[in-house]
Image 1 (cartoon, one colour):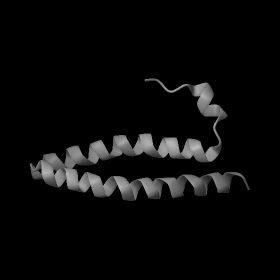
Image 2 (cartoon, rainbow, N blue to C red):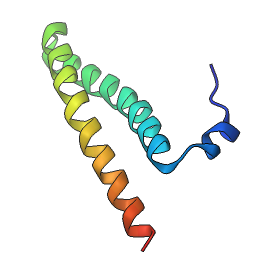
Image 3 (cartoon, rainbow, N blue to C red):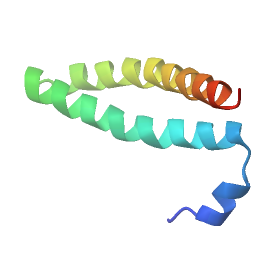
Image 4 (cartoon, rainbow, N blue to C red):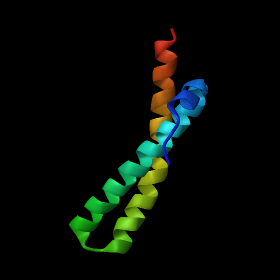
Amino acid sequence: MFIDAVKIKQLNDTKVSLLKTFTWRCLGTLDTMLISYLLTGKLDIALSIGGIEVVTKMLLYYLHERAWIKLLKR
């Protein structure tokens, strides 16, 4: 599935921020889980770390993105 760039441009800033937050976090969480697995050799620990990390990082990224949007609109 490819994302239609024209439809994304029609979305408001909040929806684009949410979409970017989700896609970036998926990639970042896979990376975290892989590194965790390589370091520990334990899949359950890697999945636990990834599960916690996905929630906290998504929230932090969204807040970061919104702060930048407010800063740039001044």
